[in-house]
Image (cartoon, rainbow, N blue to C red; front, side, top):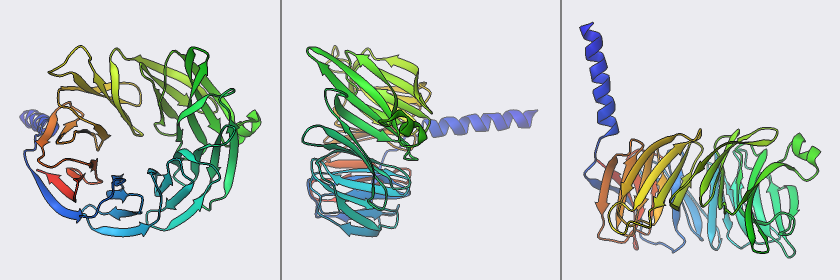
Amino acid sequence: MGLIIAFVVVCICTIFAYRYRTYHRMKVVKTITKELTESFQSFAYKKGTICYSEDGISFLDGKGNEKWNKTYSIKNPQASYCGDYIVVASKNGNEIALLDSDGQMKKFSVSYPIVDLEVAKQGVIALILHGDNGNYIELYDAAQKKLVSIKVTSDQNGYPMDIDLSSDGQNLLVSYLVVDGINVKSRVALYNFGQEGEDSGDQMIGGFDFKDTVIPKVSFMGDSKAVAIGDDQMIFFKVGKTISKKQTISFDKDVSSVAVNDDYAAFVFEDQKKTDQEKYEAVVYNKTGRKLMSHKFSSEYNKLLLGEKELLLAGNYHCSIVNFAGHEMYKKDFKKRIVNISPTGKRQKYLITYENSTNLSEIY
């Protein structure tokens, strides 16, 4: 009996030590580059980091070693990834680059300016294009073959705000802003590119309208669940042969920032009534709508990122890392301005870009 009690005590102590561990130092593991452009961005990919800009894209492993590097010319680049595939496209341009995990790249262009893009795990690309007389939803496979082209007009559908493609490439979620005179509403529509979509005639198999709210973000959380995030509410959906509402969570504070992945939805809310201490609150929900943590803070920030069961909050000269217990694991004030910061595929390692260099840094 004594051994069992001792074992339980050790387990509890280990859990608490892990959940409430605090890191006090940061070291530079490697300086990556000193030649940067304003378009430089990065994000965690597999066990490393993808770095991209208007001139090209590269993959760094967990030690900061460059495994591959590809060049292209894509102005105002925006990127998406799923599984092995990464897609980079020109915001309001026509150029697209599709890459796999080995850095094999295929480039092509489309007829109309690109508004938004997503990619599925088999390399299927979904695009919102801005045409002359309306917008187009188009799908391309990994061989650049056009699979689907659907014209959507503001009169019939509204203005597309955001899209997300399921990882299997079968379903596309679209948020529209519908303006009717002085009335505004949002429409969340589900398109299917299998048999259900073919049977519907226009690929749309379901949707919902939301009055007096704007929904700028939609995201799949796995292939059978999705979330729509508005300025005053968050709606969870079940996705199958159609789409159904499962839960709605209302917000009583202003949404300042949002970050979503397959498992979690993170927010920073701002309390306009508070002008000094703890006017911000970071909150994380799981895909069932359960609140996992809350963390209040006062530091100004401009970036919210989801890492491996942690939140990264960064400002121009400050960063804070908060775990899902709501515990601030690390905070630091920097002497140099932070241009970009991102988690990597390795725990405790982050890629930090300053005005004249990029460092792979580790907290300890």
